[in-house]
Length: 149
Image (cartoon, rainbow, N blue to C red; front, side, top):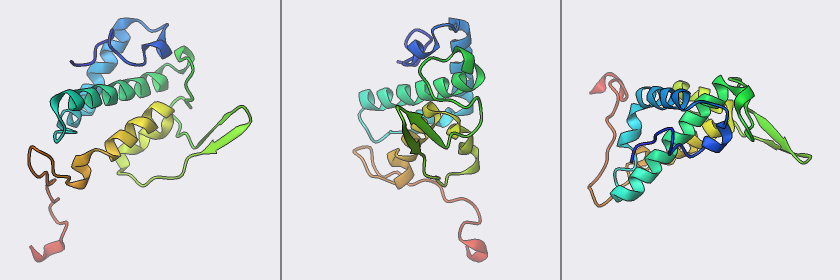
């Protein structure tokens, strides 16, 4: 089941947004992060789909929280600025810096993005983990081994 405005997991955080805005965000995320459909391929189909739907919902929520911070409920967001810490009831939590590829840095702008990044970073495909569908080996980028190959 693909994510829709009705099945969007974090709809309760965006009560004021119209379904059309959420649908457009889902469409945008499907284009920007098209590789989501390749993740968790070593898992059974039900678990894979659940993880893909959760990641899609997190990325949609991340985008909506950045674009519409005034219409976001119960979410720590900096309106597009990287989130380095948050405070709750006098307790301050600081996020440790994480080294990721440059295109992933925008995900640090709110808690949805950080959770989405954690899912992406922990996907079995990132570690060449073998599953019942066989061994997954990501392609080696050209020039990775220098000019010797």
